[in-house]
Length: 115
Image 1: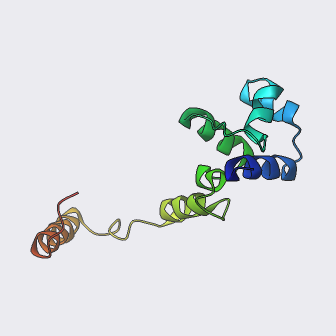
Image 2 (image 1 turned 180 degrees about the horizontal axis):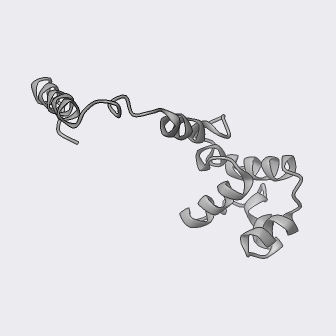
């Protein structure tokens, strides 16, 4: 069984979903879901379908593809970055500009290109 097929099946079952119910959420037939879970087939979804599948199952696409063993690895990083306050937010505009200029100077000096 491909890693994707195995992860999809395990995750679907752990979420208490039948193939029929998952198919309904995805707007596809049960046989489509079964085809993705089939151990003998190498059928894999396109990017849009994979994204929707990961969202419904509340895991990352990396997890479904077997690129990560943590079902929420990317979500945790994105959440932590979004929750982190801007360290420059309480500085006056002139001070923020000075810090940004210094960062650009440091990148140029040490070989990093401007973002």
